Image (cartoon, rainbow, N blue to C red; front, side):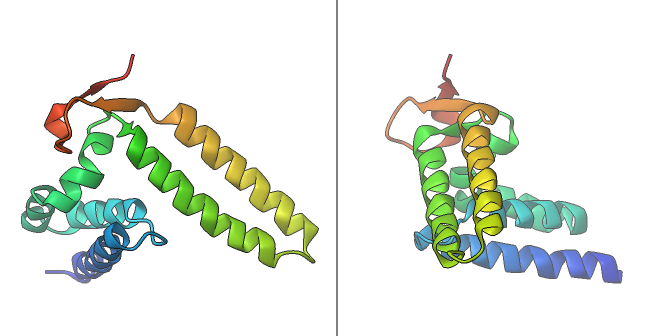
Length: 138
């Protein structure tokens, strides 16, 4: 195994651990870390990637997005709330840096626009969170 693959595996494992923690802790977003893990495992090891995409953690948080279907309203709201609260903390801490507040406000606005209009919203047919039971919101 070469150094590049080893680095991808290490970064993927870090992303997986942070994503798993983020799935349980409200202030840490799981989505970007799990996406990082999926990317790194795909670049490093087919076996690790196949294992990761078969986990419930992947299926509940990433599968529908990676397949191009989109996200449920619940997932979108959860991600937008966590990121908005995190940005609010930064905004409040920049009381003496008006340019920083303006930049953070623009980033937040673009974030909301992206989640509202850039990612397709899908509906859950049943209370089962399995991605096989989702359909497009037309």
